[in-house]
Length: 467
Image (tube, rainbow, N blue to C red; front, side, top):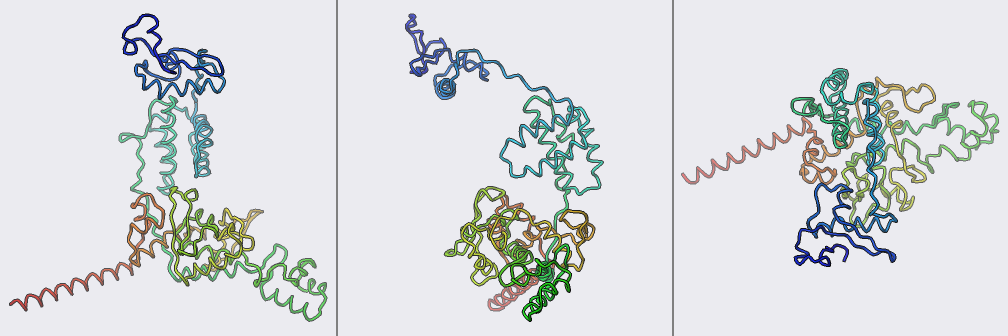
């Protein structure tokens, strides 16, 4: 027996119902470990003496045995953990939050959190940590960010509120400035995203994908006509040396073009083809970008005609399926990618099926080309520098997900089914994604008026028959 009262051998006649303390008594590797339960428990966080045998057996006995098995002697008084030094500045507190929470917990949005912490450290880092207990410093931060979008400011405030609550739980702060009479986060004031993608704009995006297929190099700007002309001259017997000189390209590059090793649309897909498939996938599945890029061929079930989104790939950690119709453009896309094998990523690299983590540069270039703007790049970076033009276009990749759900809502799909398709944990979130078009609203009102007229007519006919 590991939990018992040794008082019977000392003459106690009411044991084990007496008031004497419970003891832990364990044999391990021919060695006996005995000590009072209270001495063990109070040294390890218990706030009151242990009077129940059930508590001793279920809570403290497993910990007692675990320490013995791990090689420790629980009878030796443990040294209390020395508390880490209380942070003096907000920068110290944010650093502690990062090392003890962000870098330890299994978080999916770690990169976003680190970016937010960098901004908060730059704005508030020099202040004393106790400044977060009062609203003054945080109100000043809100004032400096007044020209930003409300949703952006709210994300920083929400992160700061979590930092304060985390610090209070560890006795680093005594209170928080976020309460009804202090700093409030005006979530209801956030501007709802209502950007829609019309059929004409969708077509322009898909047509612009062909422009991404144009074979370009930093030292040679070639078009498909140039490539075809190079191959035609080589076929006619002209020396590749003369062809390379005529088009001002290197001889190895000319040889690769003639042999079809590069820029051969019949055997190799290029960036434009990849982006076309991804745009169709986003509009026809309604997936998040991260979920869509992680879809593999083995997750496409042809018998049921659906795509499985795994739990570990979902933002809300909810597995779901996305159906597709026979003969649809999504089905043609999936069949075209099936030859790469079961482990290939459907929306990954076109020729190998390798995973692609980001498509931001290609997306920004595509937006500019679809709106007739020539992309420009400054420096060695790959991102385009037409930032003002992109801000005026104001189309985000996530807007394609909004558009997919809005189109289904326009076609009459119930909101609870849209919630299952989108993988939202709350139906309120799904309702925010459904941006009704004016034409759809007008059509719904027209149908409602027709139904009302029909009811009135039937009512009048019924009344006339009775009379």
